[in-house]
Image 1: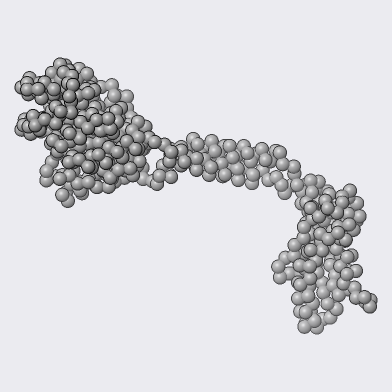
Image 2 (image 1 turned 180 degrees about the vertical axis):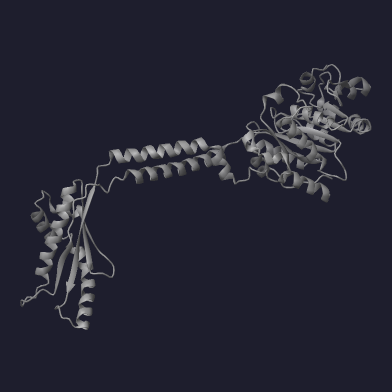
Length: 469
């Protein structure tokens, strides 16, 4: 029996769903960041400048005695008064006098919105701040409030019987003219806008990936189904046009050689000698995978029989330039097997095309004659590769899977759907078929690291499973 295992991850493409979604949707993140920066800049342009000026006052309480205890008591009294004086800064009495002293054309309500006061904790300092759209106005108002408070507190703290005030306010740092506005702050607005845009872009990229129905990466396949990923084939027009030349070198050639090696480690005690290649839906490249896997096996001095088991939409004869008039349907109807096999132009690979069109493909594929055929050709050939129809539309692949040693499921990035891949995996799991694993087709070159061609985590995992069976 073949071993089912959770799929290992490829070197160089490890990452969570969110990280992969952000990397895959990088252009969304970039657009989000640019949009946020533009919004931040627009806020700077549209927002009126605000200037701020502050005046600091010192609160003094007590009789002015030099005795230590009296000084301490006076300090505590001053700290207690600071909070009350902070509220007085926005009182009508103080603001009315401040407006008069600063000679500003404001009313009390306007001044209240512009003025704030805060006492520093555990100190006797009170800071009065004024904000305005005019730098000079903010300075004059802050100084006016400070002066008005000093006068008001002196009157307020003078005992009714007369004498010196119990507390007083002294301006220690008058407000100064500051030509730089405190708002807007271009650098801050741009930074916040850029960061906010990037975060929104990341969320949008993740949400887009979550809603995406298509398989987009090796990682998607690993997370969707339990079957191990045995290899990944890069997107290449060369593969779709014609069979690969395994006497040469190239990325695609190396990827099929790696697949051949990994298949050999699935079960070292009972090596796979017959394999069905299928997919969840059409257009995922199962036929080109079947042809090139057969050539990869032949390049390792194996004698291979390539069978077109897709009796509904056969493609192998056309792809290899062979006749489709003879083949599997002829044999299943009673013709001699030798008369239905053709020699291809590739050394070590013979081909049994689909043969004449048959009205009942499922019945033919389910016949005892096919089971006997797979058993008998095993005496002549080292490996039998069967190209089967997709699992989604028909059950032919499941029928073929029962008479071979294993099934390889092909999933093409950008073509196969997540729901279709899960359904195909579930159907194979519920059948007697032995699923070797999954081949991810059409993967972008940038997502397959060079480590894949060496002793990658994938290879080590496949070999470990094979040696432990």
